[in-house]
Every structure is written in C-alpha cells, then in structure tokens.
Length: 622
Ligand code: ADP
Ligand code: MG
Image (cartoon, rainbow, N blue to C red):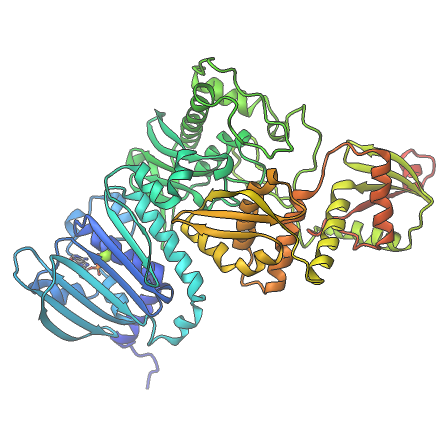
C-alpha cells in the first residue's frame, strides 16, 4: 500500500498558521489590519505575557454580519477581493483570507461583533480551528477578537517563542509603527494592564510622534516638508540628543505603509551626518508619497523591503528634504544652540545667523557629501585628533550598494588579536627603563623599549586603567555616585523607560540613580563619580543602548558593561598630555600588569621591531 496520504485539514491548518502567525506580534498585525480594513477609527490592543497567553484587539469598525460569521473563519474566505486592484494592499498580504483561520487554528479565539444594523451582537468561540459556540451578546458596534494561549496545540512552534519580554518588545515596535503610519486612527496599547500609549487619532503626525516620544523629544525634532523628483516627503527628524544607538527608529512610511529601504536609511543618515555622532543614528518618521509604479515591493511576511526604480532620484530628494529641514532650523532659529557633539569635541561652525540658507538643494547636497571626508565632517579640523570610537559602523560618504565597512570590536579582528598576543608577551615582562618620545597625533605614545618601537594608545590605556580601578572599587562595595544638583530630565520612549527601570539595581551599583518621571521622561539623580555633569546626558543615551544590546545578561555582566560605558565617557582621547602624564600612564600600565587590551578588546600597544624597520628601509634583506 502506498505511503503517501493527504495531510488532514487540521494539520494543513496548523502548518499554514505557522507561516501567517509566527509570533504574537504577527497575529496582532493581522488582526489590526482587519480592524483598519473594517473602517475602524479607534483600535485597542491589549496583551499579557508578551501576547502568549492573551491578546485582545478591539475596534469600532463595521462589524461582521451574522450571515458572514462562519465564513470569516474559513480558510481563503475574504470579503475584500473587490479591492484587488489596490496594489499596495495586495503587497502587504493583507487579503489572503487566511489570517483569522490561521490564528484560530492554533489558539482559543473568542470574537464578539456587531454591525450597526443589528440590535445585539454575536459571540463566537473557536478552539483550535473549530467553532464550538455561537451566541447572542450585548456589545457595541465593532469587533473584538480575544486570542488565548497562542500555539497551545503546536508545542514546536511554542518552543520557538522568545521570552515574554522579547515578544512584548516586538509588539511594542509593531504598535509604534502602526500608530505612526496611521495618525488618523486612535490607537490604545495596553501591556500587562498598563496603558503604554494612547494616541488621539487627530490625523497629525506630530501628535502621533508625541505619543511615542513625549513632548520634550518632540520639541527637538525638526519638521520635514519638501518635494522633489516625484516624491512628497513630510515628517520629522530627530538629531543631537534624540539620536539613538541603532537605526531601529528610522521609520519610513511609503504611501501609508511602514517599509524598509537601505537607500532611505543612507539618505537620512547622510543628511544628518554632521549632526549625529559617529555610531549614532537619527530618529525619523518620514511619510513619503510616491507613485505606485515607481516602487517595487518585495514581500516578506514581516518586513516590507521596497525598491525604487530611480534610486538616485529618491536618495537625492530625501537627503535634500532632511538637509533643508536641518538647515532652516539652524540658520533661523538657534544658530548656536545645537548640542550636536559631545562637550569635548568642537562643533562645526554654525552658519551665521541671518544668512539665508537658500542654496539650491543640489548645491547643499554636493557641499556636504563631496567637500568633507567622513571623518572631517564629524571631527572638524580645529578639534584634536581623536580615535574613531571602537566598533562603530563607519558610514560611507556616498550611498553604496554594498554594506559599509565595519570596524569590529570584540572579538577583535585577527590582526588585532595577533598584535594583542604579540604584545601580551612584552607587557607583563616590561620594566621601566624606556625612552618616551611623546605622543604622535596626541593619540599614540611613542616608546623605545629594548629593540622595539612601541605605539601605545593613550585612550585605550586610560580606559583600561579606569575600568580596572572601577571594577576593583565596586567589587569592594563602593558605590561611587555623585548627586546632580539639578536632576537631569531626559525624554525616552516607553520601552526605554522600562528598560532603565528593570536595570535599576545594576545602575545603582555603578552610582547611577534613574527614576521614571511622568510617562515619557526619566530623571537622573546621580551619575558615576568618574563622570562630569557635562557627560551625563550622552552617558545615559549610551547606557540605554548598552542595555538594549545585552541579551539577558547576568547582573555582573550588566554591571561590567555599564562600567565600561562610564569609562568610555571619562577617558581622554586626543587630548594633549604632558610628558609627566604620559609617563604616569605608562608606569601605571606596567605596574598594574594590565590586560593588554582596552575593555572593548582593542590592543593597548602595537610593537614594531628594530628588525622590521631595518627590513622596510632595505638595510637588511630578510
Ligand atoms: P482577509 O482579511 O484576508 O479577508 P481574514 O481571515 O483576516 O482574511 O478575515 C476574514 C474576513 O473576516 C474578512 O474578509 C472580513 O470580512 C472579516 N473580518 C475579520 N476581522 C474583521 C473585523 N475586525 N471587522 C470586520 N470584519 C472582519
Ligand atoms: Mg485579514
């Protein structure tokens, strides 16, 4: 007898479900899209435990009529085929007619719904894909879907789920995108009983953004409003203290849908390059209107990659729009008031007040991207040379198709590791008689030691010494914190606020006290002793970034990474040190027998032997 048999309907359902709803956020996306398709103007999303045990999506849309209710749960049943010409809608996979069926197949669903024509509504219960009960229910017009115990009958899929916190983070991100993409809809998002945000739905991008970022951050955002090369570009961009550690908050809404595009990231980042530290990324929500035929949407279930027919044109228009937004504000409003750089660095000369920035847009683009090499843009000539911060992505000056070069950190690149190993044999045995020639570029201390030329990175050594000292002090129980005279209030997102709350203990262990302050702000009351007040704000941003990057770290790891962040801010790189200071650094490095790398894994010392130099000068053959 043959062994090939058709799969049961039940099994097919479960397999399909895995594709449509691979995690709670994906189920929520489908449900909210249904609500929006039903003409809702207000949508509430509630989750518990990251959505794994409980999801509720309630809308005030048109509801489902009694005659359609069974069909709604059937696979490939949809009421939306007539809209097939809507390319955008099809591209989002919104209309495959299987979302409800798929979700129901792998959970326990209750749907309560009423149309305006009916006096009473209906409550439908569906368990694992089978309708088990339909009864009349009193409810307002609209639809509420409750999904309990997602994947309860698909243990394999359930096993793939992340921790509730991570699932909740994915839902948070989704809700942020939905909220920003449809400012005319009032979204309420509740996580674990707490309202995370509630947007007014007044159609204004500004109030939608304020719902997410808070009014403090919103004040620092620059409005973008421009058009060119067939695009209309509106929205907001945030730089300076609004900048983030990754490009996760560069959001693009193309014809109303959130989309991803490297070209758009590049255009915005390049426009902001002089105003955002290397390794930092602007925040933006740009609403771009572009003819459908000019874009190509590459459909991936969770991510919509968009391609443009005219990439250069799109790049130019978007970069120009952002540059324009930044320049207008610079020149007319606060010429000197833009805290774009860390205190220690010299900001580029601000355009003279009153000078009208009405350069033709193309000129503006050229002047930024062609005349300034990447580093000069961030570290202008008056500024002392400063090592490029470790493991940062270096952004190319012009958009490139290929990935930008990455300066790796830990683990060090092979070359670095080799160097570090080589030096690790020199360092511990090193004794004091050595000749110090000063610091090259105010960065590398030149030392003659035995038959070697050593180049010692003053920044890295200082960071290593500081880090070791702090680790020691802290392991001895000291809580070196200093109270700020006036607490520093910083605008954060809800997720960032919670992250800081969750890490309170680790933060306090390094002398930092942070308290939530209202819905979208935190108040920093004390900072680690080694920092000055001037560095506090940047430090907090970096702390958030550090916490975001650490995956479920132990308390010790968290503390160490926070200390490391504090060190980074305290170290002097590129400062001209006196000969005594140089010597002290070297002496301490030798006495303490330090690990021969900085806390990020970069080498402290690079050695060139006399012999190698002889070879280079062809004094010897090999
Ligand atoms: P699709 O959205 O592709 O049509 P779904 O399985 O998501 O497929 O939904 C099936 C049908 O159920 C929809 O076409 C719609 O008629 C109805 N429906 C689902 N959710 C809602 C809702 N929130 N309000 C009104 N109708 C809904
Ligand atoms: Mg749907």
